[in-house]
Structure formats: structure tokens, C-alpha cells
Amino acid sequence: MTKRALITGITGQDGSYLAELLLAKGYEVHGIIRRASTFNTSRIDHLYVDPHDPNAKLFLHYGDLSDGGRLVTLLSRIDPDEVYNLAAQSHVRVSFDEPEYTADVTGSGTIRLLEAVHLAGVKARFYQASSSELYGATPPPQSEKTPFYPRSPYAAAKLYSYWITKNYREAYDMFAVNGILFNHESPRRGETFVTRKITRAVARIKAGVQKDLYLGNLEAIRDWGYAAEYVEGMWRMLQADTPEDYVLATGVGYTIKDFLEASFGHVGLDWQEYVKFDERYLRPTEVDALIGDSSKAQSELGWTPTVDGVALAKIMVDADIEALECEGRPWIDKVKLPSWSTEEVAG
Ligand code: NAP
Ligand code: F7E
View 1 (tube, rainbow, N blue to C red):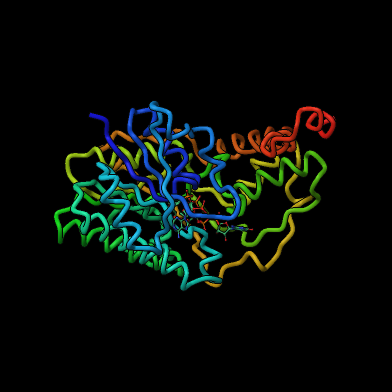
View 2: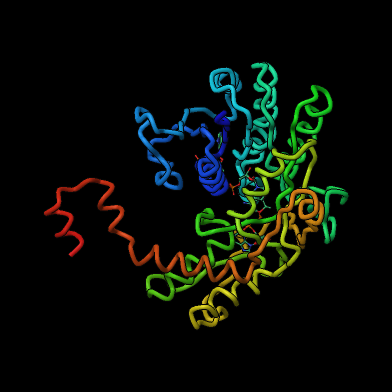
């Protein structure tokens, strides 16, 4: 029997890797996307097959975590075996600027989706994208047993989602789990998160199209892993015999300065010559240090991370250099200019 999965946030970094993984495992994958005035599916375009094609396995549906009625309709129609709730306003700094919106999507959005599963009466297993941001001010190492101390509207909204997921598990006997994931990155990471901001800048500075890089706090410590490995962990959580919460982390922490050194150093540049300070990127309350203990996931799920922050820096710099080198060409193809004009512009 083909398994059916529903992914919210399929257009995001993790959603795109998870869709790839599930399609490779033979799932029929349904994704909820937001209506936008421009295309917002670039991370999953390579997976898309016209739904009229009998071999199509990926189906996209308009929807939004702020629209509970639509979620009930989609859950009833799709009747998935597994639901992955990855959608969120996921930027911590932005959550201080848009706290109410963040609470609505990143917090209340989760109960809308859980309630849609419940109301639709589907027997789906449910994955909630919880976050190491829940630990906030509690010092490392952080595991499933570490007390939470959120330090941003984003983290507080994720805390609500964490507890309501646990509550639906206990109240309705749902197979609902929290994956408490530490920072995970990739060449598909959003351009305003610090790792991608740095690796993209390295590529541009090396190519001579950018001069400086403005950043905020360089002292924070993060446990950066590779997103493609983390979505495998999400899937494993839903295949377990019992619904439990798990931390996914590498166990290795680096400062932003370490990441700068690895990224600029990879192309033979000294980061101190290019990085400038802008207080705009500071947070009113910072999370100083996150380093996870994922021994429970390693022993119970057989999940093992193999890429740490420094290795990631190199992977991401190489990918950004490659992306920069072919910039222009993919855009020209997308607007479907006649071939004479494509050649003229490219030349
Ligand atoms: P991301 O790249 O920012 O993707 C977020 C996704 O949510 C996008 O597909 C976005 O759609 C969608 N979305 C935003 N608001 C929505 C709404 N109102 N209704 C429906 N969809 C909406 O995030 P990510 O890095 O893949 O992370 C995936 C999840 O894990 C998020 O919940 C994040 O908070 C959480 N998390 C991430 C990390 C990490 O280090 N990456 C660590 C722990 C937890 P658009 O493409 O249209 O914007
Ligand atoms: O910041 C510092 C910043 O925005 C990391 C999200 O995926 O992971 C992510 O949240 C650190 C912070 O990620 C800049 O102050 C310095 O200490 O890349 P970030 P985050 O806040 O850790 C968690 C686990 C999630 O759940 C979230 O969804 O870097 N930093 N200068 C900067 N950060 C940014 N963005 N931009 C700067 O210029």
C-alpha cells in the first residue's frame, strides 16, 4: 500500500528535503503552499510533475496555517497516513518585529492543524517541528530532559506548539511527536539566517560583487547540522513503535566567529577584513549557547549525524559559488525568452 504524507511548509528548506526523501521512499506526497503573487516553489520545482501525469506522486494544495477551515477540508480530502507540520514564521529576529503574527502561525497554527486531524477523524501520525530555541537561556548540553526557557516570541510560540502536541497525544491517543531540532542548514537555507547570509556573502565578495557583510552578535554558539540528515530523523520518529519526543543535534557547538573563519578561510579570505557590525541584527534577548545531546535519537532511532558546522560551511560556500556562477542563465530560461533573445542577453 502506498503511504500518503501531508507536509505543511513544503516550500521551505526542510520541506523540500523531506518531500525528496518521502518520494524516494515511494510515498504519495501532498504539500500545502501559500498563495503568493510570485512563484514560491523554487526549492521543490525539481520534484514537480504535472498532476495530470499518471506517474505524478507530488500534489500541491493552496492553504495557510491561519485558515483552520481549509485545513479541515484538506485533511478530510487527502486522508494522510503521516502529517509533518513544518510551516512557521521561523525567523527569531523577525518574531520580535511581528510577535502577534508569529504567535498566530507558529503557535496557533499548530492547534489548527492538530484539530483538523482530530475533526477530520483521520488516523494520521503527526510530526511537530519543535526547536532548540525552546531551551533559550538554559545552558548546554540540552536534551529531552532539559527545562525550557524561551527567549523570543518565536520560541514562546513554539513552546505552545510543543505542549499542545503532547496534549493531543495524551488527550486523544494520537501518535503525535515533537522533534526538538537544533539548527540545521544547507545550501537551501533561507538567505537571512546567519549561516547562509555568511556563505552567500563569501561567494559574492570573492566574485567582487559585494564589499562588506553586516552582522550582529558573533559570540553566540550554535550546534549546526545538515538539514538533509535531519529530515531523515523526522521520518524515523514517525516510524517508531511509540510516540515520543526526540532531540536531533550534532553535539558540537561553534560560535558565529568560527563559522566565519571556516567560510572565508575556505576561499582564502580573512573574515575580519570584511565583516562589520550593525546593531539592527541584535535581538532584544539573545540565546547564547545551544549544544544538543541527541543520544536518545541515536540509540532508539538509529539516527546519526555526520556533518558538523565547519564541514557545512564548506559545503554551503561551494554551493553559493556555483549558484553565483550560473546566476542569470536560469532566470532567463524561466521567463521563456525566444532563443535568439536568450543568446543575445547571455552573450
Ligand atoms: P523555512 O525555510 O523558513 O520554511 C518555512 C515554511 O513555512 C515555508 O514553506 C513557508 O512558506 C511556510 N509558511 C510560513 N508561514 C506559513 C503560513 N502562514 N501558512 C502555511 N505555510 C507557511 O523553515 P525551515 O528551516 O525549513 O524549518 C522548518 C520548520 O522547522 C519550521 O517550523 C521551523 O520553525 C522549524 N525549525 C527549524 C530549524 C532550523 O534550524 N532550520 C530548527 C528547529 C526548528 P513560504 O515558502 O511561502 O514562505
Ligand atoms: O541566528 C546570530 C544571531 O537567525 C543564529 C531558526 O531556524 O534555528 C534558527 O534560529 C545566531 C543568533 O538562527 C546575525 O543573533 C549574528 O545568535 O541563523 P539565525 P537562530 O536564531 O538560531 C532555530 C533552532 C530555529 O528554530 C529557528 O527557526 O546568529 N547572528 N548576526 C545573526 N543572525 C542573523 N539571522 N543575521 C545576522 O546578521
